[in-house]
Length: 423
Image 1 (cartoon, rainbow, N blue to C red):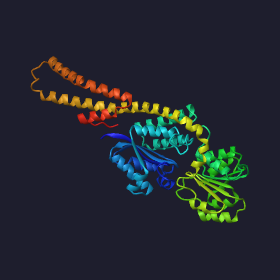
Image 2 (image 1 turned 135 degrees about the vertical axis):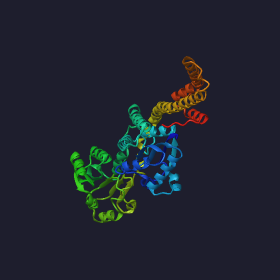
Image 3 (image 1 turned 90 degrees about the horizontal axis):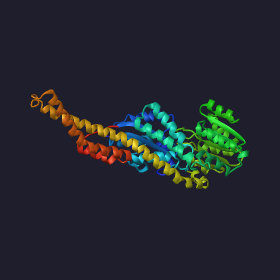
């Protein structure tokens, strides 16, 4: 059965946040989601990257069974029909998959050009998949090379210059409505992004930083780190009257702040506008709360326009980053092609040897009068004939693999000789 590398996914260009949040996989659910995906028929390897901007399945498996199974998996994840999920997803195979992931890692395929957070998200997902045992040789190598590409793009170009991550944009949008140095800022969620937002807000001179998390000890840890205050998560809405800003970045499966809770808080507060920034996927804050007087609510899609002024330098560096990506794609495809061609070459040699042995066996009786030396000569002669016939095809297969474009030739050889290779 022929194994192929392919990708099924959606992102901020293909689907609105209302769709993306239904397809998103939380970090807590990621191990189980990977296990379910890898257990599908014809799937050999699986890697899943899920952020607020994208959910992508990287798979090595036999087509079309593996692709169809992965598409059904996505439909079930988002509670969509197959027709619905197909409208919002893209499919890529082989070289296009490599180019796509390397471009993502370089920050050149994010809502925010040069996204500083995507590398950490790729690495975190890689560690989970490694622990879950769903990676094989191909995906291990692919993701590790993607991390290398991302680091090179950021060290050798300015694509990551002039901070413009979602975390940075979240704090920037707050500054449009109030003086950060006079603001009480509540950060809900104590993960990596919560910590990054806290650092950006602290560096910007925020008056007070409050922290809330379902695990109170984690909120206390961040509060100690930033000389802030930890508050109880169940009492979250009760603090809205006393703060100026709430930035929510949790993976809760439902709203942690409802419209009615926000409305009641607005009726009792006297502190001016309440700025709410929702970085969750799924969304953390009831979107209809933006209709309330005095509430300024932003989600990840809203932040895109906020950061455009910071991206000119990054756009100038984009072409440099893409040159790095292309060079590393060719490098990876040479390795990938060599591995694939190796299996094809072995299968071809095995087939030829099996045919040779079968024909010699048929001649068994006719060769019985030959001396051992003469039998050896016949064996050597037939081996040389097979090797000479296969020399040119094998040489061409190896040459094509070295150039990274041997897939078509390998496919043709397998069809011509009816040989099958697996990765």
